[in-house]
Length: 276
Image 1 (cartoon, one colour):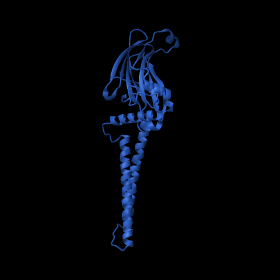
Image 2: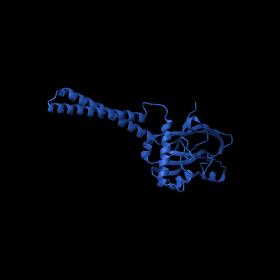
Image 3: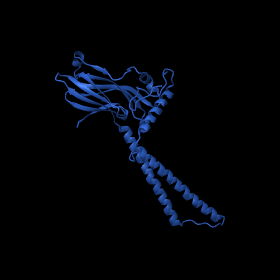
C-alpha cells in the first residue's frame, strides 16, 4: 500500500500495487475516500463561520422545526380525539395555536435560509478556492539571464521543503500534473489533486530557447510514478474524474521578486507578493 500527502497526489495514496488489473471504479472510489478522510481529518479547529458549520447549524434547526411541527399536530390530533371520545381535554385557543404554528414556521424558515446560505458559501469556496502550494523567490545574478531560484514547497503541518537552483532564462517555470475532479466533487470540498514535477528556465524568444543554455530540475523522486501513469492513460474513464493533464506556470525572473504558486480547480496559477 502507498499513501498521499495532504495536497499532492503521487507520493502516495491508499491504492493497491497492481494497477493494471484494477477496476477503474474501485480505483476512483479509493482515491475519493482517502482524500476525503485526509481533508476532513485536517480540519482540527472549529470555525463557526465555515460553510460546513453553517450547513450543520441550518440542518439541525430545520430538523428541530420539523419536530416542533410534529409535536404541534400530535397535540391537536390528541385534543380532537379526546373531545370525540368525550374525555377531558385542554388545548390553547385558536389565536394561541395560530401564534405557535406561525413561530414554528418562522423558526424553520430562518434555519432554512441559514442552510442554503451555507450551501452558497460552500459553492463559492469550492469553485474559487486557491490553495498555496509553493513559494518562488528570484535572485538575479550579475550575469544576464542567470538567476538563483529559491523554491519552497508547502507540505502538511508546516513541513516545508526549501531548495535552491541556478536557472537560466528570462522566466522561471514550474511544471506538474493535475487531476481535475467533476464539479460536484469540488462542491463536496475535495480540491484539485496535483504534483509539482519540474523547475526550469524559459526564454521569451524561441531563438534563445533553441540556441542558449537552459536547465531542467526534477522535483520528484519517481518521475514515471505508476499512479499518475495510470491516471494519464485511464483518467477520462474513471468515475468522479473530469480530466488528468499536465500544467505549467511561469513568470518573469528579470528582477528580485517573490511569487506564490496556487492550485485552483483548473490548474496552477501564480501571484507576485511583497515580502515584508
